[in-house]
Length: 64
Image (tube, rainbow, N blue to C red; front, side, top):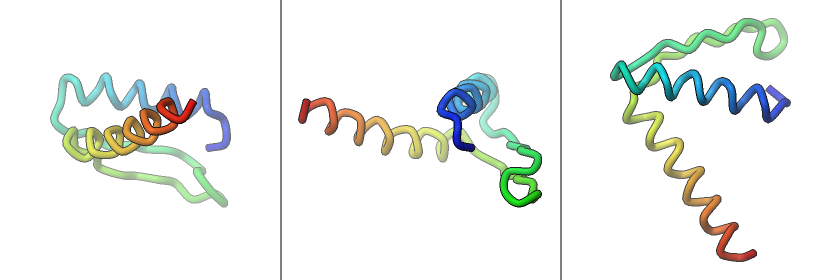
């Protein structure tokens, strides 16, 4: 996924699903070299991923 807009839309869709459910299944057709991605993601795991991104963003913003 090269496009930032696609990544943001995917994250927003996952966030909405995980707001109502404690886990979700992510399906992305032909992610790389024709391979599909099927991944089960829990709300806790998603929050951990986002927390690390938010921490990096905060550090960047403090430098600016």
